[in-house]
Length: 308
Ligand code: SF4
Image (cartoon, rainbow, N blue to C red; front, side, top):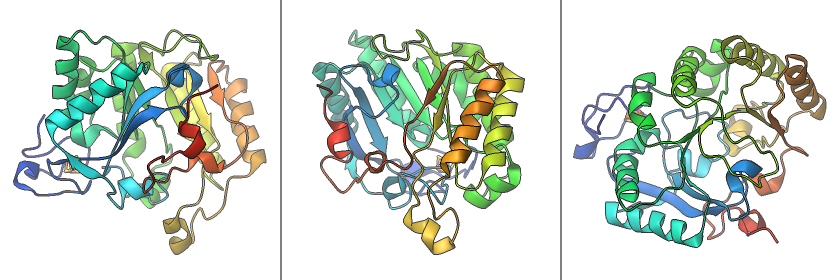
């Protein structure tokens, strides 16, 4: 798949981004990146001791109004990188000793990522490549991704079509995310090795993330039901409590509060009651250190510092 007649995500805009046209994601075929850094805020088996070499791309085909990275997904903070600069940046991260290369909201830049990953493999670089996505994906793209991507970290945001429609304008999110996830699991299996301590970092497989939303307990419980029904309770999960209201939440008067701790506890308890055992859970609610500021050189503040 390419930037011509772009079908890289389910919006299927069909435009030619090589001509400078932009679709729903708001990005042409010029590569815009907000940050490339060793990141220490992922799950322990992704971060490890040395951090995850993370690339935050600008723009997004999913476009939730509450996006926790709204500065880059909606406001397009970032600068244009040439393909060579991108590759050099990835090599620099590898030289720093990161455990993996972690592409965040990558779908709309797959042609650039594919070329860079293929070059790195030709160079003999063998650390895992991670696909860290919204879950709103074109399942037809997954087989191609799997030729270079080792680990998938898709969100599963919505099990309720009406909620998806309200938040990102496509009621098909649950069915599309499920279809893409099934392809990922079929081809890559579950995340392994499974080491919640982070002593061993993940090399292959799928870990599903779910962000609990304020006042949307039913969505979270139905998400767990759906995941259990399709993949069983051995599916590794990361259940996140870090939601913070973003400016658009205030403007719309929706989700303009942190989540209730009781709701988060109920979601985690329900996951356990279904038999899920491979779960990453978070302590605390809406911790400020999870809210990056991409106008800063250190978007994650101290969270972006090596562990001591
Ligand atoms: S990647 Fe962007 S241009 Fe391409 S289909 Fe998705 S939203 Fe449209």
